[in-house]
Length: 99
Image 1 (tube, rainbow, N blue to C red):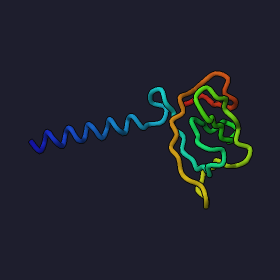
Image 2: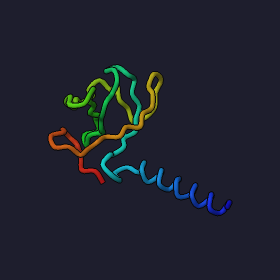
Image 3: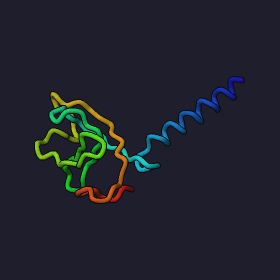
């Protein structure tokens, strides 16, 4: 019985890890830090120009963060995020091909 439980738990853990892997499936994951300046973030991605592009809601355009409110490293006043970007999409500026 314990062996069966270990196998089920192990398989569940592997499945959970596979679901979080960047580039596996329809979502691509981006990590970073955000100070909340623009309000709630709906979607976003790091562009190949090293700027973060964010959208405030479904169907709203992606806007480049020229104000440095998104960062790759932590700083005072910034909260971490793990964002699932549903890309790649055509017409997104500076979106590199996901691997």
